[in-house]
Image (cartoon, rainbow, N blue to C red; front, side, top):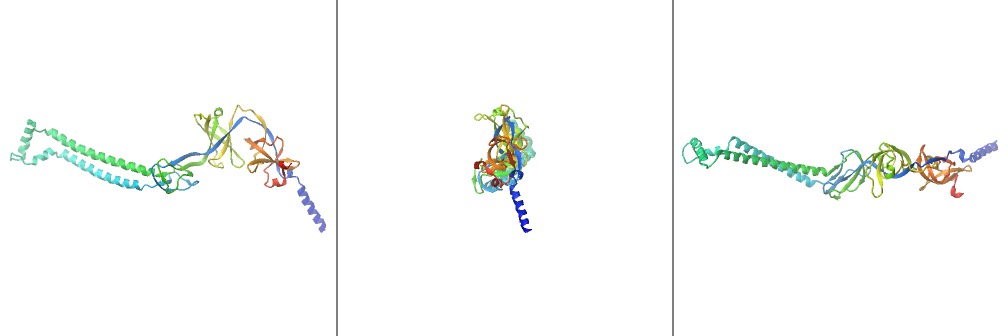
Length: 381
């Protein structure tokens, strides 16, 4: 009985090794399809919006909020430039405002005094050569002086009021200049503090704490990356087939490539004179993998392109071998690795094969990692 048991186990093991590889793997046919009604244009993934924060005042960088990849809310302080000299100038300006306010207040009081108690009337209290009460001088000497042309009471009155009014105006102007100086200093102090203009992330830090910067020098690149775009230079002959709001297929350079629908969001009105291309931006769906700077391809409709027959395979049949792509093709019941050149994406999550397949072959979908050890490559044949 023991010998019979050992014989049964041996037969089961032998049968398992004799099972064809095709029965263990999911297969698909390399179907031939007609393509060629679109052109592939390369582009770059860019943030939805991006700004470069530059220094507005000279000084020493005292504070930087974070580093590349850190996220901040709008109005969060990102960079602080040393402003000790500006703070000293502000205190001096505040003192100048106080002095100007006192001068203006004194000028107002003097004008009110002249308006209520004129200087020409106060001069009547001084003794004269008549040796009689000042009442007699008021009725006799002033009219006689006006009659003989030695003085003019109304002109003197107007001149005294004008003098006091000018003194008040000068004091008010001095106060206004002091306030303007304070506002200028406050503006420079605000310029020394650079805040996030919107919710976003630091994509590039161009200075370090302790660096001395000058006005106009770039400090940080800050971007909103919750939404991404593809920016592509589209040949002029293809731009006519695009319009805002339409969707076109886009392939992102992540892994073996991810196909998404991108929406045309902006078409620049002027073409580049040297390259004869137009800049076009395409909005990507939220949450796509990758980030700014990644390579992408856009399929732009091209009515002038000639249709041709090419084989297509499921995207899941592609395997990465170093920098090359390949598929496992069933031959004589065994998987054989065949290197291919991949073209553009088609409907149904399939990709075109420019070279390496003829069409009609059986390819392995979702091949396991150890399939290469069980099969043989085309180079071994």
